[in-house]
Image 1 (cartoon, helix red, strand yellow):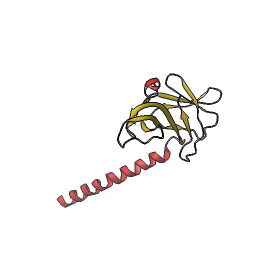
Image 2 (cartoon, one colour):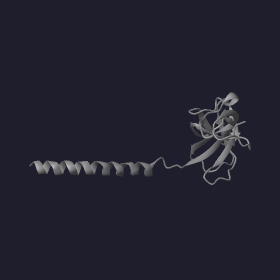
Image 3 (tube, helix red, strand yellow):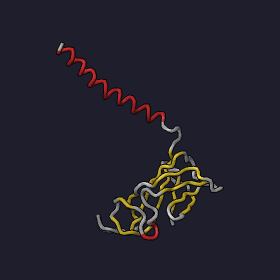
Image 4 (cartoon, rainbow, N blue to C red):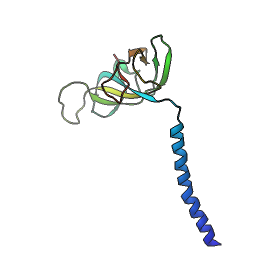
Length: 150
């Protein structure tokens, strides 16, 4: 009797992770049925940061920050997508060599997933205190487009 309980417990212990793994993959496959395109948002705020550190817009661009709401609008001003900005990463702003690890003027760059966006043509990216900028095509095949907040 004790041996039977041990085998049943072992079978349950093996089956639970297997079943959990199966249910996770079906959620991923069903999804919302729409793909997310990535739009790179460039915020040339010139804030002093170390390259690669997390960032948000600074100074005049402080409204362009993680969790700020953005919308994508078509040429008629109709909202086609909405979401929240992620945290950005500090990237080199000027073609100047600074010592490694030194704080330098940077731009904050955010890679934003936009549900259902497959082309940049005719769309505007709207965020913060009314920053409305056309989405420009990108040379990077992994991106739908780029937005330069200015």
